[in-house]
Amino acid sequence: MSASQSPEHADFPTLLVKIFGKDRPGITAGLFDTLAAYAVDVIDIEQVVTRGRIVLCALVTAPGPNGTGQGELRATVHSWAESLKLEAEIISGTGDNRPRGSGRSHVTVLGKPLTAESTAAIAASITATGGNIDRVFRLAKYPVTAVEFAVSGVETEPLRTALATEASVLGVDVAVVSAGLHRRAQRLVVMDVDSTVIQDEVIELFAAHAGCEQEVAEVTARAMRGELDFEQSLHARVALLAGLDASVIEKVRSEVRLTPGARTLIRTLKRLGYQVGVVSGGFTQVTDDLKDRLGLDFASANTLEIADGKLTGRVVGEIVDRAGKARLLRRFAAEAGVPLAQTVAIGDGANDLDMLNAAGLGVAFNAKPVVRKAADTAVNVPFLDTVLYLLGITREEVEAADGLIDDRA
Image 1 (cartoon, rainbow, N blue to C red):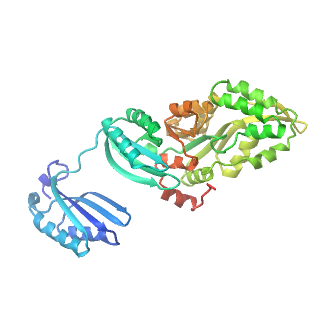
Image 2 (cartoon, rainbow, N blue to C red):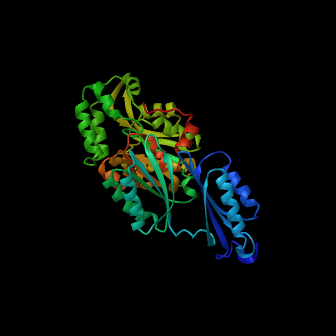
Image 3 (cartoon, rainbow, N blue to C red):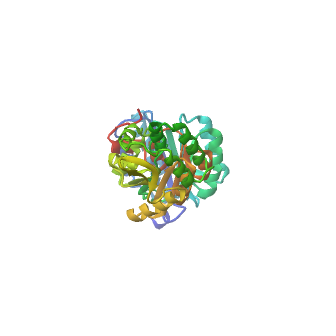
């Protein structure tokens, strides 16, 4: 290749070779064997197989001095394609693909189902912000359809704002995160427990045994809506449990129901090298058990005081409230050796907001409206493992890491 044809020069002659048709083994190798006879250099490759149909694109330097050897290459490629009952298209041009614009993001869209209408609206919104869709691929087809758009030309924050508005109208979940190596380096995930990792509110399980379930549920709902100070509501609810026999703790542990996908999420993250923790406004009597059962790295919650084999109606030690959850996220990150910008926090209630805002990525999981509005992104399907797709982890990677075990029953 002469200096004028070098990829360092923007105007060197290139050919875009497109092959499409029924997929079979050996097509990619066959195409490049055919091109090798002309001593071309490969600039770019893209291949997609959908329902057994292949689209293979190769951007290569044009053969011969200043690209003068194109004719014979074209004839040879077309002849090879016809022999395999494939179609070929060859387009002349100059240089590499156009450079991507500044500002690069990953846009993940979750739908159950994902309709053509919502996909069109998301794509139009990306264009309206000045962004360009460089690539689209599917992350998962179960339990939701998840697709990812690689977008350039617009900064992440304005893109996130525009798509959040569109997503709420369309009824789909959209996550927008900055592109870069840090996405794969997010190695600490910290989650709320009640109504996030588990389906229950633990204090309500205790209250059911104490015969004061309704009174506790009313206070809990007001606290989660942000209408009451959490610490005051905690003391008020725990006081209703005074006199309850401590043996009820084992009964409550057995009643706790994991959220569908929780075990898959945690097991997959652990096998991919992440550290995982939980923080809870509930009680260590339950979170410590979850830590052992799920193999968590960190767990912190309030502790019910027990005296003479009975609950005293008080808590002891540090209170885990809204500010406490954020404080614990920072503590876990420091202990794990993970920068705060590379952490993920997941929660559903107002007392999770500080933690969600402090994390590198805050995910509202089936959350209250105030939480969905404040978080970086929201997931509104009842499967906790869909958070994996927001991290760019595909369904195939989940199955490989998780041993094909599904916990959504």
